[in-house]
Length: 62
Picture 1: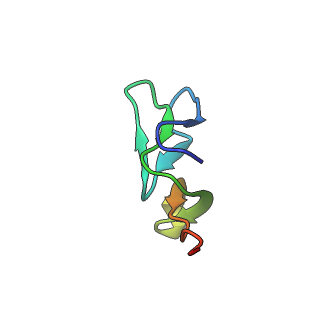
Picture 2: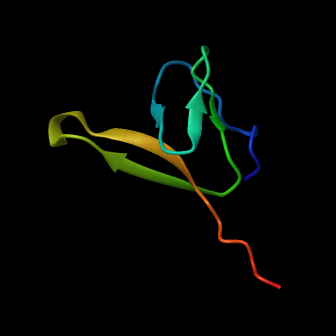
């Protein structure tokens, strides 16, 4: 995923922005940096939320 790409367009906040992702005013989740997309759940059991994060990729050394 490249920085600036849109990950999810949504109405309301079904997904929350995690590390390396941002959320626009219209609840769109976008990438803030290059990397690999990761979906995960976190928070107290009664209020578990779904997050989308961007994990950095180690560049291949030549």
